[in-house]
Image 1 (cartoon, one colour):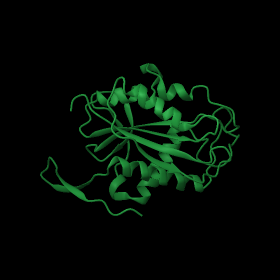
Image 2: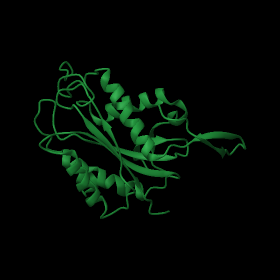
Image 3: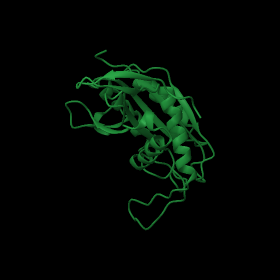
Length: 221
């Protein structure tokens, strides 16, 4: 259990003062990992996109990114209502694009989330997994291009990229993360890497993983 956060005070347009709970990125990464572990240990089962009657083996690993993030954020809110009460998707200012995870009303953090899942439930490999992290082309909506989008955005608070993934003995996750940092550095400035483990997951293939996070330094700051 982490210590309670310190609130700062915000002046609203109506002149009212209220507490604004600000969490640092390292804590967000740790809370996300802990919440994902908690969800995983409840043994949820994802359904196949092609056949809803076909269920994958229990665990968070087979779930698509949107469903996994939604369950994880709900658990974060249940564990700490002060820090994560406003957590959820948010539109980019002046744009139809939607950010995966915004924290706070400003928001204090605008965070894009990407899944780095190199393998499948049956032990074969995901052909598009590396593209979703490393592609430099905007149409691919990769982690690299999400960094550019955040850096150029008009969000009032801080921005970050979060990547979660699962370990594979033949394709080490850390190699992909190091490649992401190298490619992203060509177009954006990232803060120090934050990291938290996913331990003792229930799925026989997705048994362990990591959650990573980096602040994206803004072009207009």
